[in-house]
Image (cartoon, rainbow, N blue to C red; front, side, top):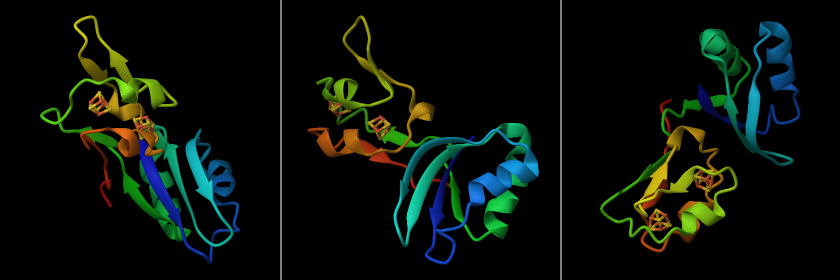
Length: 131
Ligand code: SF4
Ligand code: SF4
């Protein structure tokens, strides 16, 4: 299950992911990490069977979390099937189908935001997730 984590300055230097992996044994997969000196954000995948415990620990340790059921949305009425997103997405969320339509596997998105920035019709948007 995909989650976005937001660090605050008071915890940015703490090895929180390592601590939670050791405490729970959960195989937490870091999809994307933007960590700076005073703030940071990560998108991680958490195994479903450990989800409740891991989320409780994230919160206890001071991380703000939001669950990303569908990390990216497309407004199909705006999409002109130009294909730019298929070229630029680093993990291949978009695919050109035989009929030239563009399919997407939204659940694989790591919210890098690149496709949102280049889509010529502003058809794409990142999800805020559920808090
Ligand atoms: S870049 Fe935008 S308009 Fe082009 S195929 Fe992707 S979603 Fe559609
Ligand atoms: S934000 Fe767009 S480019 Fe980035 S991973 Fe998600 S679908 Fe791909």
